[in-house]
Amino acid sequence: MEAIVNGKAGIWRRRIDAQRASGQSIRAWCAANGAHEHSFYWWRSRLGLSLRQRPLPLPRKAKTPPAFTRVVLSAAQPAAAEPPVESVAEPLRLCFAGGRELILPASMPLERVAGLVHLIEAAT
Image 1 (cartoon, helix red, strand yellow):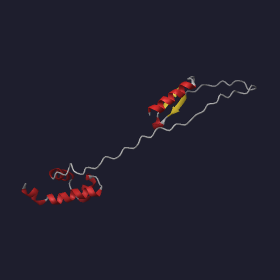
Image 2 (tube, helix red, strand yellow):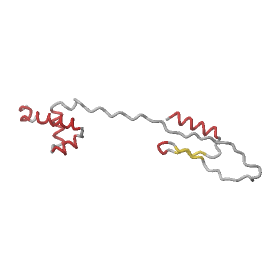
Image 3 (cartoon, helix red, strand yellow):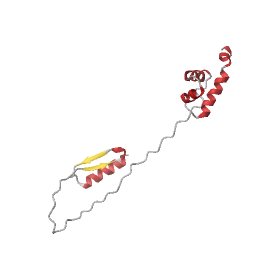
Image 4 (tube, helix red, strand yellow):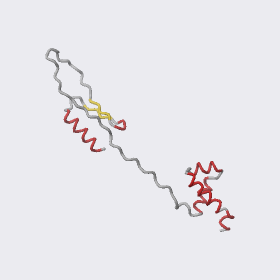
């Protein structure tokens, strides 16, 4: 094909190699080197370089398990001289990694709450 489009094949082969060696994206390299992005892709395809030396995908981050804090509740009895204090039972709020929150009624038995926490911890 007309000496591969008037001898420009060698020039574009060197440009494509330079872009790969630079570590820049094609768009950034073309802007910095005064090349047209669509021409870059056309020549890369024309020269059969589009399938060669593709960058490897970035490794995925290992999924870290959510961090839990151990909570120990003691069944301390109020002193006999103190009258029982009536309190308004507020719901139990459990905050998990990622901003998720679980709201449980204050009347829920602690064994059930512990079971739910263990299930959630095992699922993530």
